[in-house]
Length: 356
Ligand SMILES: NC(=O)c1ccc[n+]([C@@H]2O[C@H](COP(=O)([O-])OP(=O)(O)OC[C@H]3O[C@@H](n4cnc5c(N)ncnc54)[C@H](OP(=O)(O)O)[C@@H]3O)[C@@H](O)[C@H]2O)c1
Image (cartoon, rainbow, N blue to C red):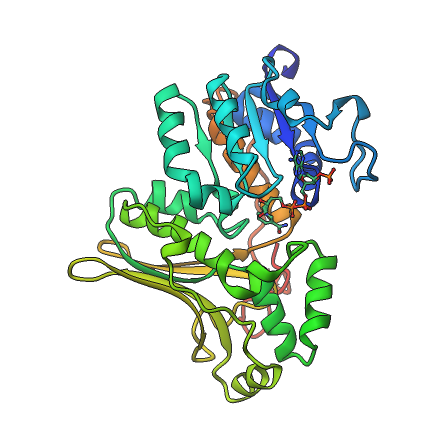
């Protein structure tokens, strides 16, 4: 069946934490992607900086090139996925990819915060897709929720935790680690940028808030316009003390409409322990949206790391490929009723640990 399908020819820039996870996920989920998009995804070219660096995934070495323009200009490709980071040269690569007829997907918040509006306009003019779900909160599907699910609603404000590294560092310090230990572990787990300054200073969060505020309020907001205080000046003792007092510190991004404009900022804040954002631990991110019709909408997910970011990128890939109607009748699944000892304890309590 899949042999007769159209190929979805993909180029990838970057083979670090995110790029490798995309390669792995494309392999692991190739059948479901084929079923859902009616295409066969094929990774044809990968741009890196160092051709001979050891990689955590096995890739055919003939796919690799150290000249990103080879990928950007490859006329065979339908889609370019950018996972290199930084504003330039990534912005030039994405522009050229759009101009040469490709859909583009990026995980790069600095780029989207600085050039999202003009890339979106260019893509619209050319009839191409510019998608960036992975750029805010990795697996947190916030861009689609604001842009599609709530497209008929009016968002009044939002408050969130949008940096997995900062949240990881805060909650590890609460648990007794030093800042340096927490940062080293965050780096080893592929959560932190090589230079975590932007994570701790709040600048990374400000870039993500600028993206979300632009989408939610339909006005241009740039990272440098977002007032920002990070967690770098907070002592370990202050973080542990607040945690012990039941008012843990989280690095918050908040924005809301006012009578004639907007209020927004990034800052460390103490939260009641039962607040949904206070309960985010490790690399978790979360956003609470306030909308006219929907009321409050809360979402949380793993906000950093290769696989969660790859989940968002593959979602964008499926969106760019377009879903097809599946005309084949799927087999009726076997369904077993939930019973005590099978997800429900003898006293009737639902056991959610490791539910699925
Ligand atoms: N890590 C996360 O948890 C996470 C989550 C969400 C979004 N993101 C975003 O995803 C992007 C990538 O992050 P990462 O953590 O995967 O970074 P990374 O591990 O440092 O990987 C970056 C990759 O890009 C390649 N590269 C850099 N500059 C290049 C250039 N000019 N041309 C070609 N290749 C280039 C590097 O090549 P070499 O390997 O050859 O040096 C490397 O493979 C960033 O925008 C980041 O903000 C990351």
